Image 1 (tube, rainbow, N blue to C red):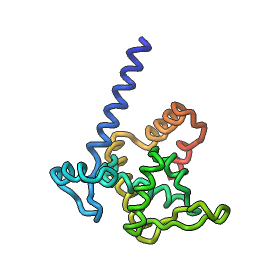
Image 2 (image 1 turned 90 degrees about the vertical axis):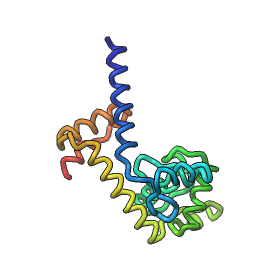
Image 3 (image 1 turned 90 degrees about the horizontal axis):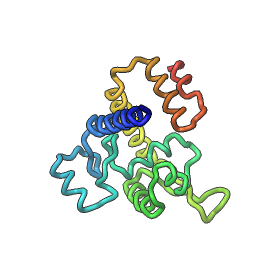
Image 4 (image 1 turned 180 degrees about the horizontal axis):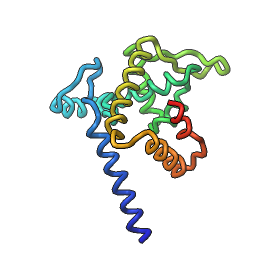
Length: 175
């Protein structure tokens, strides 16, 4: 009995993950322009870090931006690598491209002059806000069948599942 319930739970998570991928807006090229499926397929072969899209329909390298937006004090590369679960070398390439594109700037850390802290530029803030809007649209579509109380209950269950004792679901009552 327990085994079949666990398989059912796993199956439901698989479906939710698929829904996240399907609900995503089209992927974009480096300029922010939408790309066709053919362009997407060809582009992935040429530049791995720029062409892998996340569920939010944005470039994987741009996943750094919302973390920086939410963290006004800036972040070190190690912190970001831990958050988005990429290797430091992959993150370095991503950051270099974001700096090149004008979304991120590196500043010497106040406590350790050898270390660099990353901050968003004004253009980076706009891009991060755009990304958060896209993420919100995807989540809205995904959870359209749940009312507010059910969403809060889901948050509580997911928090319990991952061992998070926060009251994030209770914060939803204030929204």
